[in-house]
Image 1: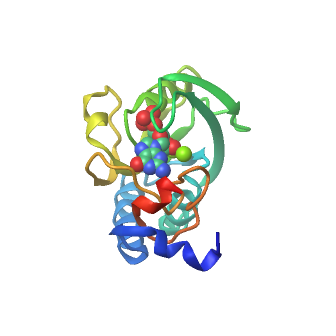
Image 2 (image 1 turned 60 degrees about the vertical axis):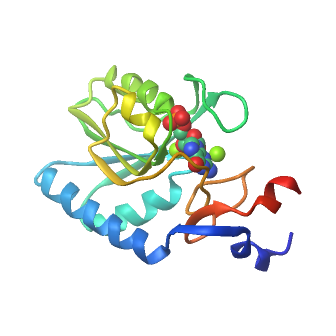
Amino acid sequence: MESSAVEGDLVNILFTEEQIQTRLGEMAERIRADYEGEELLLVGVLRGAVMVMADLARALDRHLEMDFMAVSSYGSGTKSSGVVRILKDLDTDISGRHVLVVDEIIDTGLTLSWLISNLSSRNPASVEIATLLRKPEALAMPVEPKYVGWDIPNEFVVGYGLDYQERYRNLRDIGTLAPHVYSS
Ligand code: 5GP
Ligand code: MG
Ligand code: MG
């Protein structure tokens, strides 16, 4: 695949780079106000959240720490099952810390609800979630993200950290893939 063909594989752009940055700025403003005077630890969920972490952390423009976790959610194809395994744990002891989990998308919410109960058992001062995108199924889950960029319909999106078979994470915009990508 030619690198120049990458942007062309998107058929429908849902959010442009500019819209994403604007929305992250608004989320950052709320987060800054809510955590005023507190130490804040951002926990990014690898690999999808790397772009959101980088941009949200800079939009926050205040002292904070960043750490990452990698989890694998077993399931076939594009659906997760809720059976989660830690591939990379935090390097930080979060007991007594204010933790903000940063994710790019919540679909079923199974991965994050497992992660939140795992993190909660480590006695943090608080655990909240910031996600750029949320799909409808997540509304039925007990985990309630405090900060949500946008609610989107139930379709498969790529770009800005979101992959299809590990590709497209490096797109600046978020959109849906052209049908020819799936059939090739
Ligand atoms: P769930 O919330 O279902 O446990 O899983 C969330 C994870 O599924 C996300 O972190 C992401 O890796 C993947 N995922 C869910 N919906 C989409 C989507 O529309 N596009 C992409 N690329 N990944 C998705
Ligand atoms: Mg994720
Ligand atoms: Mg993926």
